[in-house]
Amino acid sequence: MPRGSVTLVNTNDMKPLVAPLALDYLGACLVEAGWRVEVLDLALADDVGDAVARHFADRNPVAVAVTVRNTDDCYFASQRSCLPGVRDLVKQIKGHTDAPLILGGCGFSLMPEAIMTYCDVPYGIQGDGEVALPRMLEAIAAGDAPDRVPGAVYRRGDGFVRVSPEPPPLEELPLARRDTIDNERYFREGGMAGFETKRGCNRMCTYCADPVIKGRQLRLRPPASVADEVAMLLRKGITHFHTCDSEFNVSYEHALAVCQELVSRGLGPKIRWYAYATPKPFTDELANLMKRAGCVGINFGVDHGSERMLRVLGRDFGPDDLRQTARICRRHDIVFMYDLLLGAPGETRETVAETIELMREVAPARVGVAAGVRIYPGTRMARMIEEMTPVARWALYGVIRDNDSFAFPLFYVAPTLGPGIYNHIARLVGDDERFFLPGGRKAERDYDYSDNELLVQAIKDGERGAFWDILRRLAEAGERVEGEA
Image (cartoon, rainbow, N blue to C red; front, side, top):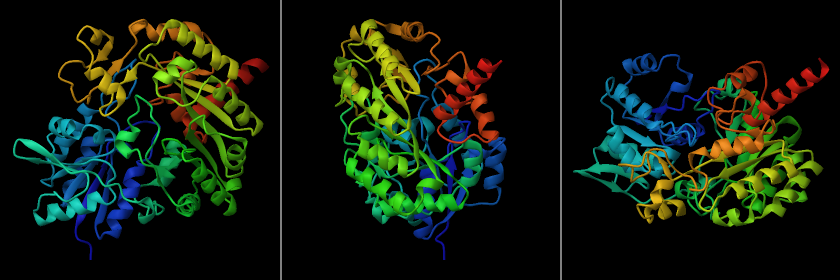
C-alpha cells in the first residue's frame, strides 16, 4: 500500500518544451519506495494559477516538491532571473495546500539557503534527489527533522541546517523506467528527449557549476541501463535524443561502452541523438562508434580559440585540438557546433578577434557565442570575485549589492571590453550565419532558444533534434530557396 502522495512540480516554462528529466527519474524512485506520485507540470499549463488551483482542489499530499532547474537565463545580454517566478508560484501553492514545500534541482543546489530564504520554504535537497527525497518524505510524515537525509537543507530556529550530500551509485537507481512525465507530448512539442549516461564532472573549468552541483567524481551508469532507457522511449515513439551529461566523452572508455551497447542492441539505425562533449579526448574511434550508435550531432564546449584564454578558463586543450576535432567530425559526417565563452579575466579585443578567426577557419556548422561569465558559488571564478578589491569590482555587472550568494545574475566582463562586448563581437561576426548570438536579429541566429517562435513552429511542423541543429537546417533551407529564386 502506498505511504501517501507527493506532488512533483515542474516550474520550467521554456518554449519549446524541455522535458523535466529529473522529475522522471525521481518519480520512478518514489514509486519504488512506496509513494504515490502526482505531477503538476506547469510547462504544459495554459494558465498557471488555474492549474495550481485545480491540482490541489482534491489532493492532500504529504509534501510538494518543486524543482528549480535554472536560477536565471545565464545571458549577460538579458540577465533575466527565474527566482521571482518561483517565489510567486510558491505563494500560489501555499494558498491551496498546507503541505510543506521542498525545493530541489540543479539551480537550487548551488545556493539552497539563499533561495529558501527568498521563497520562504522550509525544506530543500541539495544534489541528487532519488534517495534523499523518499527519505525526507518519511521524516516529514513522521514529524521528524530530516537530519539524516543526505543533501537535506532545512530550517532550524533562525538559521539552516545542511546535511552533506551522499550521491548514490547510479547502478542502484531505476532510471530507465521513464513513465512519470508525458514524454510523448514533450517529444511532439520539444523535438527530443534527454537521457544521462553519467553524473559528475572531473574537469577543472574555472567558471563551471556542474562539479559543484553533481560532484567532481564521475558516477557512471551501466551501459545496459542507458540502452534500456533509450529502448523504452523508442517504444513510446520517441526517436530523437540528447545526452544530459556534462561531457559525454568523459570518461572516454565509458562513452565507447555506451555506444557499443547501443550498436549491439541494433538501436543505432532507429534513433538519432546529439551529445555535449569536450574536444579532447575525441578520436576517430569514438566518432565512428558514435555514428554507428545513431549520433548525428555534437555540441563541443570549446570556450575559446586563444591558447592563453583557454588556460585562464581551466581548459586542457588548445586551438590545434579544435582543428583536429573538426576534421574528425567531417570524416565521419557528424554535424558539430562549437560553444564559446568570451569576456573572462584577461580577455582583450585581440583574443576575441583571434577566436572568431579560428572559428571561421575550422568552420563548425554553428558557433554559439556567450559573452560575460556568470559567477556561480563554489567555482574558482567565485573565489576570484570574493577576493577582488573594491576598485576591481567595476568589472562586474548585474545584481551587485546584497547578492553575496550569487543567487541573482552577476557577470564578469573583462575591463578592456566592458558592456560593449556584444557590439564588438557582432562587428567581427558580421553577417556570418553560422554564429548564434543572444538576441540575434534573426530568429534562426538567436542563441536564446526560449520563446523562439520560429523554433516552436518548426517542431510543430515536424522538425526534430537539437535546437541548434533545427535552426541550422531552417536557415540552410531558406538559403537554398533564396538561391533558387
